[in-house]
Image 1 (cartoon, rainbow, N blue to C red):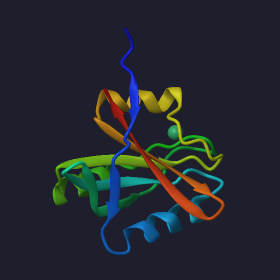
Image 2 (image 1 turned 180 degrees about the vertical axis):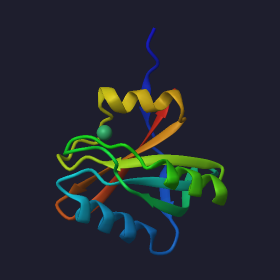
Image 3 (image 1 turned 30 degrees about the horizontal axis):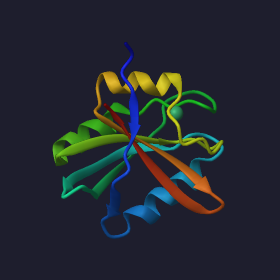
Image 4 (image 1 turned 180 degrees about the horizontal axis):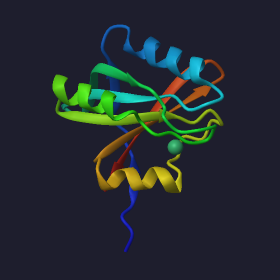
Length: 128
Ligand SMILES: [Zn+2]
């Protein structure tokens, strides 16, 4: 049986300036995918994003991403309860693609960022 993916339905809160920074990264990269690593911790059902490490997208072309491993190493150096790789879907779909599902082999949580009009939505997905 395939493992199901669940949308994180709890509250997501952002440390100072991080939400705007991620929004800016998504806008700047469009129509390519932006990516990075969110550093977070969970408290009473709320996921707090306390830092974000922007990453180069090493993939060629649009519609894909390959997160620069240097960014991942930086995130590991900083350390957090959760290291969450995120990337944007410029087409606006908040669901993980088939390729994205492979990320769950290494990560418990992934983030997908989309722009609704001009507002960023960052959706977290969990392997259940
Ligand atoms: Zn994707």
